[in-house]
Image (tube, rainbow, N blue to C red; front, side, top):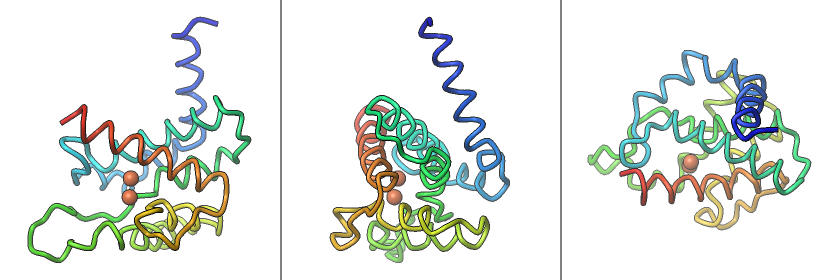
Length: 155
Ligand SMILES: [Fe+2]
Ligand SMILES: [Fe+2]
């Protein structure tokens, strides 16, 4: 199969797994906030979802793809601009996973596995929140890789 066909199939599979979420009005509010450089929180979450999908497939980790991509798409669903310099977001790094998890529960009634993966994604900054599932580990890694790429290469 050609690379272009593979990418097309991948895009369709990802769309099937998170299509509803990516079109949701509340999720799309993340387009209003910048995450790294000029990358919005929405685009960052989508990149983490796609990268999580690729890590899982290429390393044959057999994670639950629905849990994986739902959690990845909502891992930074905190809905505020963390750059605002009034001092209230100084602890953003430590607390935003809680806010994202609470929002995900409030708007989408997600399960325990998704909640746990969102809650632990900032490990090792949140040192006690060690990821507890393969989905959580994949998201934690994909988030770091995307964050570095967005910060260093796409400013
Ligand atoms: Fe985060
Ligand atoms: Fe993130």
